[in-house]
Image (cartoon, helix red, strand yellow):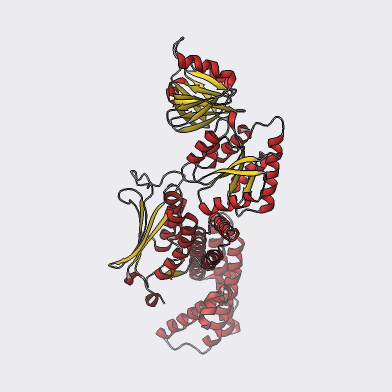
Length: 268
Length: 360
């Protein structure tokens, strides 16, 4: 039997302890790390590459949903959300078939969720949770009108636009393109990570890519792009993948198929 | 008491006024006669009879006014004038007939038909006066009723508002606490688990039993706050530090129950649980002149208070607390947001100083 490597994330010590005590009874789960806030969680998930994350929603600083937004869609672990009371989130989890357990933790409910995670993990097409599914929950939760539009100002031909315009209902938001660190796609949603914030908009990678300078933004994975000006360092992993560190602390995985482009870039 | 009952029942009131009005008309008439000479004893029969007829005629007038009550103002004015004139004429004619019957020899009778209506204009004035009184009293009573209704509606809205603004137990707190207790049990830390259950029960009882209209003493309120904070302290561990500063004089002062609860919860939510290293909350109560001054301070990030307004979307707890104070004390209170130095939020509330003995 394969064991799933798991991380438990909760800001309350007793809540983490309760989860760890319960998981200790389950041979299919091995808890490899505990985190007490969102930032620690993002770092640990990127560094340790767990199969499964028990993620509390309400936490200081970054909450559980912020953690999900920060994770690269190409490297998502399985997520089981843990919450005490969040009626909206629970409804959304049901709609989008996202797994969750409620506090206080019901042992039967927890075993069910773990069982399901083990099953999904063993499936051949396994590739963690789909970020798209999770984004749908995040989108509805923040109450934004879901259909965000991206428009770029086309300046004189030959130059690239300097900012993105996101239209959400009657509100327009401008994002300086130079401030965008990386972008990843989650199905119909694009997550634009800029100046410490994640903007979610509804558009396609193709459309977004067409308004970005290909010299500056390059693909690093099937559905992630990075701003080359933000790369601070690159580390080679044993499995041949690259790990990029960006200024601001974010870390991105580069798949083997996109590795060469980065190599060239770093060499030049 | 009986008079009160009569006045409260509109039907009795009408009859009481009707009899009193016509009775005094008859008396005025009689005393008017006295000025000239001692009236014949026949008046003792004549006056009651014509007053009774007046009563009957004005009953018909009232029926007419009721029937035209909802009609156009011109229709009603016309009904009043015509009604008063016809009523006056009928009343005058019957008076003349009865007068002749009682005071004159039959041979002298047999005047022309129209002669019976002499004096109709005076009778008309009596009817107009009656109508004026009728409408005046009716409008006055309607205005009174409307006023009563409005006062009642305001009182009900006030109470509903207070109930709505009253603190409601935060389910997030409840479930997280139960989760912590469940861990303590799994961990076999029975003593702490037990004391958590006890504190949680006491806090639940305090917050569920409390009537939003009732005031409690500062001591009771602080006790409840401590129950709540002790529970949170177990959850947040060393991340939560507490400071209480309750002046002896302020202890017996009265305040709305659970007023500071949402403020403390706010501090926990924004200052303690958002800060990775936790923080401190200070609760104080003091007496300043004729005011009770209550404050809740934290050392969290504070609020952007540059424009003196609550941030958009946030601060439901603060807004509710402020509204509740307004509902209870009107303008006799103040609710101030300030900055804790070097950072954090301080909420200061001033309410009139009341003590148990004075309020009872």
